[in-house]
Image (cartoon, rainbow, N blue to C red):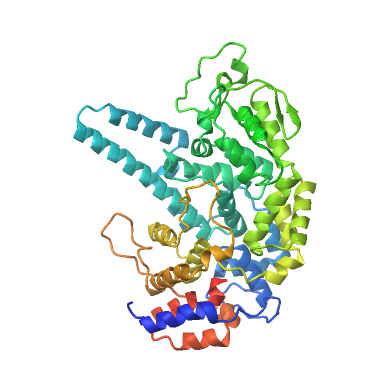
Length: 522
């Protein structure tokens, strides 16, 4: 390892397992924030610092400044009820808007690539056909690169950090895998139109938005679900993963009935209106790439979870989603998933009960459920002790190291996350990545995490180099010993961690050891 001996690396890894947890965050030791700019900042206690860190992708000076200026209650209110749209800083917004595929409507993008794929398949010359198909695949990969870049930019720089954390949570809950079919073209729009607008809204609206999106319809095969050719994949996952959960009381018959309700909900690759019998024409729904085709729908009456659902078209789907989202099992499953991610691998039953009750009282208001969690003593008792999953580890490291300096190339981030087993949009099965922290703390994970800490801590690692060019990295060095560290983070370190950092032989060594410390890992 450059600049860091094998012995030092082993010592750091040992520290991850052996060092005690940071002091309980409820201890209140005010620290004076002294940012590089002259904007005044209030003092934060360790508990307040831990709160900000727990609800964001990691602390940086802009976030701490907002918390200090607004105060806890105002800051939390803004995080729980953010305004619609992006509030990215200008440099990050410009980078986002410069991504080539971001200016193309998803329907145009998909139809263009479909036409290119058909044209490639029609070529008679084998070499030309292979080259054309390779060009199509590379084009879809380029679009997907823009999607991962957009996600990383928002995670790093959006002031609406709680919403961005929940965007990832819901992407995982309603997982789709980018490698299936043409999903590389669809996942960016899936984030922007199905997930982000509803991340802190009503759960029922979130379910409907994912249901109508072509990424989900293709991933779980409902585009192939039609009367007489039933495909139960999506119906099963809606009940098993998206709403009620395994063992919650639904039966195989309920899955079949839901699959029949979902017949006809699919994808419109062509913008022209399908030919339908006159009596079916009023029931047709076309919205971008989404199509409800009544000619493919099973109009028989159904019974779902004991509720009679009269066969009448798309309205059946809306009624079924209402039924599922108002099940007590759904309230409890959503509450438990949120509490697992934010509080503990085995969250206290009393906390889950209160969150589930709030879900029911508010008809699935996600912000209200999260607020109930934040106000709970169980949340306060565990805040600052939750081990970071790989995405949060990498993003929090970059937020601290570059503190608002906008990266040029997000490819290294995706590479690190792939190595750590939590690549963006790369989980193949619909269950999503594990929420429990024990999934991300094994010896192999820690060894890889230490190596990535070294890469992040040693230099720009390609983050400031335009992808696909020979241009050198722009001048940038990770500044982890910055104003945020000296004013806030340093006070959280144990004596043993301080001693380990004091033995660092270079800034690169110090950065690596700090990013490998138990305090940073939580």
